[in-house]
Structure formats: structure tokens, C-alpha cells
Length: 287
Length: 334
Image (cartoon, rainbow over all chains, first blue to last red; front, top):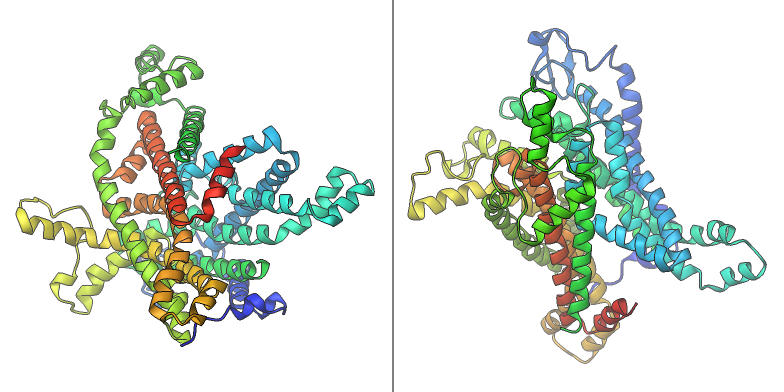
């Protein structure tokens, strides 16, 4: 074997959609979102409702329950269809992940731009606060905040946003510092463009590539953290379904009915892999 | 030393900032720990007495200064729940987490580094793709789910397929109930109990390191000076060891500091699932009971560990890669 050649994707000038990883990742994510939106519509009145527990509960995958209903992924300890609840949970988990990561990205872009543009004391301050947040493991920060400030959807999203902006901030700051020395910025400045407009119209768009990668990767991360919090009982509270609290709920039945706890994990892995693939493909391109 | 000192100063400053953050986060949270310490029928006076007893009635800045002052003396306060010194609570739990985290960190880097090296320089394209897919999937798996999946495999799964009994691993605890075994038998028991937790902690870590190491060795193997070395007729093994591996060590050292928070987070879940009485479990118990001094103490310990790891990574980096020296000095020249 010869020494490895540079990745073809790295040197090619073709569009991003020719990267297999991006194709697969985007297809997976689109399928997940589509199912999450559409599937629960066909699930009857209230998928979280508990009816006829004794005849329906703990039905194994690919089989019929006592009442005659067929379940692809079986039922849980309360006789609820696992697959249906997985798609309901997908709405929560995907929503929380995307929202948390996008909000964090927004904070990161704003602070990064301010740090690079203003410099001086504001820059030192923003960087120090970023370092401070990076020093405490994010999960610990989330645990403490969610537990003490009351578990729930809003708190989880807020905390994900407040603890996830640091990498975006650093990327944007570095990009803005790089771009602001370029000739076209000087040119615009000489034409009398106001600093705010210069930053918004001319500098930030050039700093967007790496930021997009960080936000995409952040989505997967945020979904994992949300599921972890919910698993520990500090995130989304039952009966609302989230992949994390479904795994927690299936834990007592682990050896009798392993599908209850294991199926949500497969969903989590698929989602995070999709985000990682997209992020990998985009980051190869933006280099 | 001249280079290390400013870094050390930065690290201490950072630790101080972290104490501010965690103290504010915990003490500004809604709810009053004093009400949790008395019976539900307690009068307002009793609550006030409890509050005074733990110094919770003082203004927040005063409480913070008191806490930092005792922290500097090495005193982390007293647990509100068990009335034991926080230091003792941490000292009890630390060895377990340290052993668990240390061994799995070592395993992650050794296994992940070797796999990444094999993928980048030795593997056929198909095998490389297969391992890449595998490591991406493992890296994406939440550790608590991985733990439950392995428990199923090692207990009912192993029993179903009729695996030999030594493969049916214990799923919970540090040692067998009773714990009467001594000597070699005791260590064997401990190792059997530790296998699943270590596996759960090391697998995602190794997958992450492998992904990273593969990329950095790929990048290193196309560097111009490697081509020059090849042109000079150096042997392949020598090029890989002396040039490629050496160059890709730098990103791995940086990764070390970045991996630690992940290991800490993983250990929280692993200790919870496998019922290991380490720091993570102590943290969850303290959070559930609103045991503020313990939560504060543990958070500071966690943050201190991360800051220390990054400091060490910085120092090792300069030793390893002379190019970093000017950057290192430049960072402090501000």
C-alpha cells in the first residue's frame, strides 16, 4: 500500500452534496423528522394514555398483544406502543436539541463578534467567561442547574443554550479577526459603511462556515445531554415522552422486556450519527 | 518554569471564577435548603434556627467569602444531610472514580490511538470504512444506554445463548455481596465487577480518540517533510514512528484535556447504573437532597481536575512540539 493520498473530498471543487457522508446524514435526519411529524397523527387519540394494561403490557416486538393490536417494537409496562412513543419523543428530543444548539449558536455568534470587534476589556471578559464555562464539565453544570432550578422543558433548553455557546464564540471570534484585515473590508470601510453594517453584511457571512459545523455537531451533543438529564429524572418529565426518560422507564424491565429501554437508544444513536456525518462533511469542506 | 508560572496563575484565576459561578448558581436557585432539614410541621423559628446553624442566614457575599476562606484552609464545609465533613464524603468516593476514570482514560487513548494508527496507515479501504462507521456509531451511543445494553448482553443474553458462566458478568456493585473473599479471589471478584463499567467508559472514549487519531495521522502522512523523508529512502516503519506518529501526537495531547469532561460525565452515568459509590453517585445523591456544600465541593473538584488536565496538556505540548513555544509565550505576552 502507498501512503495515503489526501481525501478526495478535501481537494475536489464539486458541491457539498457529492459527499456521501452529507447525503447519508441528511437523509437519516430528514427521515427522522418526517416520521416524528407524521407518525403520531396515525396513533389514535392519546398515545400516552394508559388503557387495558393487563392484556397489552410487555408485548414483545413483532407480535400481537392480548387485545389483538400488532406492535412492531412491542409495548411498555403500561401497554403503550413503544414505536409510537419513540416518534412522540423524537419531537421533543429533536426540538430540544435543535433549539438548544441554535440558541447557543446565536449567543456564540453575538459574543464572538463583539469580542473580536471591540477587543480590549470586553474581549478579555468574554474569553474568561467562556473559559469558566468550559472548565466545569457541561453535564455537571446541567445537572446542578436543572435539579436546583426545577426540571422541565424550558429549563433544559435554556441551560443547553447557556452552556453550549463557547466553541461557536471562539470560532466566530477567530474568523472575524481573520476577515477584518482583508482588503474588501478595508474597502467597504473606506466607502463609509457603518461598523455595524460592515460586521453584519461583510464580515459575519464569511465567518458562517465553521459556525454552521459547530452548530450541527452541537445538535447531536445537545440531544445526548437532554437524554442524559431525562434519564436521571432531571429533564423531560413523564408522561411526556423523551428518549432519555423512556430508557429510564424501561430500566426496571430490562431483563424481562429489554426492547423498552434499548429501542430509544437506537433512535438516539441514529440521530447523533446523522449530525456527526453532516458535521464531518461540512467541516471537510470548510477547511 | 518561566513559561509554566503564568499558565499556573491563569489556572488559579480560572478556578476562582468557577467557584464564583457555581456558588452563584447554587445559592441563587429557588428553594431554601433549611426547609428540607426540618420536619414538614416545623415552625418558622425552627427553620430560622437551622438556617442560622449552617450560616445560611448571612448575606450571600458574606457566605461566599466564608466559604472561600475555609476552602483555602482545605475545608470544604459540612454536609447538610449526613453532618459529615464534605472532605470525608469526597475522600470516600474519590478512589473509585479515580480508578475507574484513570484506567478508562488510559484504555481509551491506547486502544483508540492504535486503532486510528491502523486505520490511517495499514487498513484496506473497506476495513477502514467499516471501522470508521463502527467508531462513529459507538461514539454516538449515550453511555447510560451502552451500560444497559451490555448488562442485557452479559446477563440474560449470555444465559440465553448458553455462554460459559465466567462470561455472565455481575451487573451491579463493586464486589459480591458479603465480600468475604480475600487475596487473589477478592481481586478476581473486583475485576469481574469492574469489567462492564470500564468497557462502557472506555468504548466511546476509544471511538472518539480513534476518529481523531485517524484524521491526524492521515494529515501527518501527507505532510511535505514526510514525502521528503520517503524520497531520502528512509524505511516505512521509521517514517511512521519517527515522523508521522510524532507529528500526530500533538493533537492527541490537546485531545486529552478535551476528553476528560466526557469521562467525568460518563462516570456519573456508569456509577449510577452499576451502583458504584464514586463521585458521580455522590453528586447525584447530593443534588437530589439539595446538599449544597457537597454539590459545591464536588463541582469545584471536577472543575479543578479539568483545569489541571488542560494545564498539563499545555505543558506537555510545549515539550513535544517546539513550534508551540512561541505561541505559548505569545499567549502570555498580552
